[in-house]
Image (tube, rainbow, N blue to C red):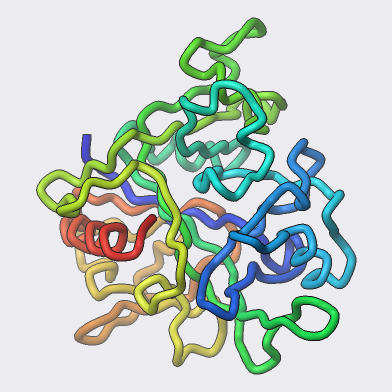
Length: 299
C-alpha cells in the first residue's frame, strides 16, 4: 500500500532534549543522538562504526550526559547502532520501529495516519571535529535541520489493545522497545515498518526496505535554508507550497507565512509539535521526490 500521508517527524537531540545538536562527523556521516530518558539502553551501548557514542555524548554535552546515562532509543532504524543487540534472542525478526504517545500521537490519529503512510525523520545537526580531548562542535558551523531516516507503516499497535499478557507472537522479539515495556498513557502506539518500501509507480529501481537511515549528509537532506536567518527557516521543494485548495503541512497552516520562488517553497518551521503531516493525495509530486531521496541516499 503506497502512502497517503507524509509525516515530517522531529526526533533526536536539540536544545530542549539533550541540550545540543546531533553530530555530523568529519567524513559527512550522520548519527541521530536519541534523547536522554530513564529507559534501558545506555549511550555507551551505541556505536557509529568504530566510534563510541557514549564518549561523543559526554564530549558534546560537556559531561551532562555520558556512557552510563540512558537514552530513549526510538525510532530504531539502524540495526548496527545498538552493539548489544546480537546478544538478545529473536533478532532475526527485527525491523524498524517507532513509538509515539501523548499529544503527538493524538495528532497522528486525528490526521488518520496508518498503514502505508511514511515518516521522514529530521533533527538538529551540527558539524563536529576531533581535538586533543575528544569531540567538539566546529565553531564556524551552524546548526541545521536535516532528514536522517524513514519508516513506512506496515502495522500500528496501541498497547492498550495488546492486554496485560504476553505480546502477540509477531512482536515477541520487540520487548526491548520502550513503547512496549513501558506505559506512556492510553494512546501509546507502536508503528512497525513494512518489509519493503512501496511508493507505487514511483518506487526506486533497486528495492529498499520500508525503513532505514540516510548515512551521509547531502544537500537534498537539508531542510534549513542556507540563506535563512536561522535553523528553523526551511527551504523545501516548490511543490510543498500550499496552492489554493490544498491543505498545508499541519502546524504550518497559515498561507501568509509561506512564500515561494520558481524552485522552492519557504516556511518558518513550527517550534511546537513533533509530527507535521502532509496529505499526499493533494501533492502527487511527493512520490517521485521520495523515490529519489530514499533510492539515491538511503541505506
